[in-house]
Amino acid sequence: MPQTLAQKILQAHTDAAVEQDGQIVQCRVSAVLANDITGPLAIKSFRGMGADRVFNRDRVILVMDHFTPQKDIDSANQVLVSRKFAHEQNLTHYYEGGDCGVEHTLLPEQGLVGPGDLVVGADSHTCTYGGIGAFATGMGSTDIAAAMALGETWLKVPPTIRVNIMGSMPKWLRSKDLMLMLIGAIGVDGALYKALEFAGPVVDNLSVEARLCMANMAIEAGAKVGLFAVDVKTRAYCAEHKRPGVTDDLAADPGALYEREVEINVTGKEPVVACPHLPSNVRPVSEVRRTPIQQVIIGSCTNGRISDMRDAAAVLHGRKVDKNVRCIVLPSTPTVWRQCLKEGLIETFMDAGCIVGPSTCGPCLGGHMGILGDGERAVSTTNRNFKGRMGSLNAEVYLASPVVAAASAVVGHVAGPDQL
Image (cartoon, rainbow, N blue to C red):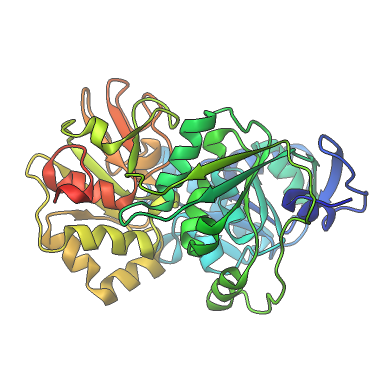
């Protein structure tokens, strides 16, 4: 039978015949991931189930990115548990300190995930890797512990929603806007336990980093995965990021059956923001202009890549951040940081009055390095704006692309770059 992209990847990782959506299949995993928050829970379960060794020391990956640099004793102890486990198991890929970065930028950048892989992670935004054609999904720490021990997991074959993006991209529209538009259209549960498969001429023209941004937020629509076909751009990205040898395209079969199809036409569209307190509360920037803000975050696993840094720097160049706004810029890996330094972007950010920080998840989850106080508002390039997500329960977060975030930092209220 003709297969969707999700079905095709799962088929490559199971001995069962993938014949229909909803089928339960036992799959071999390509990589297992956890971080400094979820790793200790998985390690506790790993020991509790009587496991002594991980299934493959090269394919279990621990990334200390959420509360690092460690902000307090508890977070230091979390990292300590993970570090001891990594040393005990002789893990090849344990990241902490100067070679560490935000996990979902780090893994594709280091070639640790790639097209056709099946990746499970103890983090909901593991779905990011669908941007390079991997079936990647988040799981609870107990399931991750089992995958660490066995190298296998079970999955329900998800039905697929095909998202066709058509039209011509306006100057200031970015892939973050495309994803927010989709979530606004179908809701935060519109793709619950489904695969989102992106296609259309606009998608074909997107860079791989733009695709990774969109796949990252598939979970914000409730999806199990967000998938992009593997094409010449994907292969070039892999070749440049320590994953040589990807020679074949990977796409859904003609005639594959979809649960439904959604079409988005971007011609003439303006940038959008997701207003408090849901990623689906999406409105054009023009409708919420002049909403005063006190903070801007540019970074995270959604928009902390070098293309995002270049976007933000282009808007901030020769301008100053409003004196009532703290603008925090967090390049998402040391490689991105170094490239920013090489291109003079760090200087641009600092000349504009930004705070440039380390490669950490920090403020995205309300962890540290950018907590909101009572009544404060932020424009952020992160992926969630739930009540209390970034600090006080009385704070508000507006999700946006880096160009909108940077423009908002300059004018002191929600704004698009066309206002500058």
